[in-house]
Image (spheres, rainbow, N blue to C red):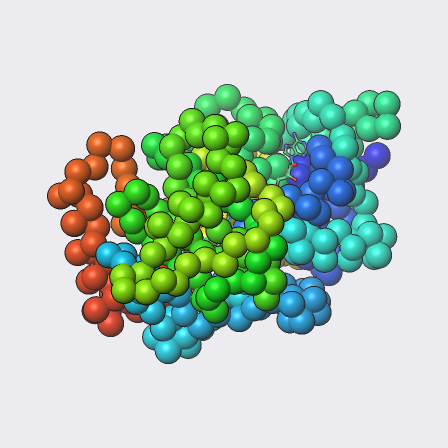
Length: 387
Ligand code: FAD
Ligand code: DHB
């Protein structure tokens, strides 16, 4: 088997790259470890920056997004039992759209398959070889056979636990990382959201986030400990904890509860791989970098990477021009480090760190108060949040 660009991973990065390459007339094959059903139902991100929405629309992927996506023009920061709205659109002219990552995956898989795209699901034992030469290969097990895909280039889009990163020659890549001493417990519930906009909440017991997927589905998160046992969180305990953290002084407002249809714990981690390329291997999305989810950035960064990568492959195939491929790392990293800083800043401002004392909490509250009272601070947060 031969293709122009072999893509490892059918997450947002790999699938969107395959689609954008197709729009440029460049062939690709996508290799995915999981089943189609699994990736179409994996509950993850939900907040799309304006630029992400624009990219999806320009690529002809806007139909369901425009019909079902929820446009939000502000967020609430809640602390000390009080809510404060940050009017992002008023401050920046831009907005975010709430649309589930698995919906983007469904849109992309359907479109690629409709247009004759080649996606191999449920592959095993994937190896990437020869990235230092002109003819890299991807080998994998599929339908009981061992297959070899010969490529001009390999795009490693296989997420933070993938194998692409380790396929670079020893010593070619450097990783910068930070682990956080807590995790998020996320739920999806059949409950009408009690709010119109997202709430990021700091409470003495830890962070909480109110989000949603539709007028009937809520998505909520709680800061929990790193080694949290999900069995210790029956539904009732989750709703009690959410009500306690989101409580407003002098009001009996609380999140609307309902049947919980998905529940999971996500550790919080950051890393950046530099460079994001080695020979003919190019890394994109979570394979190259991850951020803690507090800034809602991972998916948006993945989209930004593949937008740059598709343009660079197009320049190479259309004109033999390798300048954009050569500058891919440089071009992508500017945004990656901006987002690393923003995600770190949001995380340290909104979470309770083990060992934090009352002093630490009061400094966080002072910082939040500054953000909601100073138009300059609120604008800086908004610019980063809407992208
Ligand atoms: P992935 O989505 O991880 O896709 C990688 C794919 O590669 C997967 O399908 C995987 O099965 C496959 N794969 C792995 N190994 C192999 C292999 N060896 N061979 C073949 N295939 C392989 N981001 C935001 O922008 N906004 C948010 O609001 C947000 N919230 C989040 C909330 C949570 C709880 C979590 C966990 C993440 C959140 N993120 C958010 C981050 C976002 O989900 C990720 O950044 C995004 O999924 C990255 O896309 P990707 O395509 O790079 O990687
Ligand atoms: C969602 C996830 C996030 O990480 C975030 O910061 C905001 C919203 C969500 O899943 O809706």
